[in-house]
Image 1 (cartoon, helix red, strand yellow):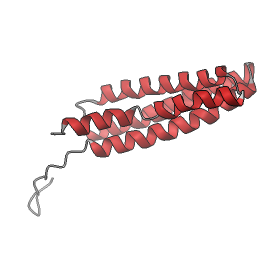
Image 2 (image 1 turned 90 degrees about the horizontal axis):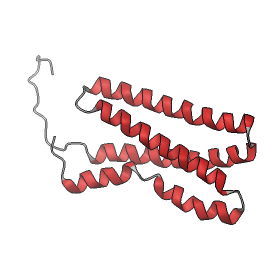
Image 3 (image 1 turned 120 degrees about the vertical axis):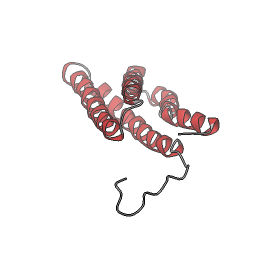
Length: 139
């Protein structure tokens, strides 16, 4: 698979696209008086999600398409359960307002992250033509 360096850099930037709304949210949290602890929790959860996604991406390198799709599914479920488990624990044993504000912000970050990762996948897709197998032969 050959992907141009420009497309590779664009894909890397898209994989970290969620950092942009996270940084934009900091002055919004501060100005609205929602507390920087809520922003810090949401930013920490974003960092945890990015790290876990990168670990699963690394584990999938060089593997078959079915394995990669399986790893991505496990990654998505693990990250969702872990994130909302942490938010639930903070709401249950800590500050509910903090957990709700962090959850709302994280929902935005997670959405941007998923869109960015999807677009990054399309950007890095190899555009080289594939050989067509003659009729009757297995692909």
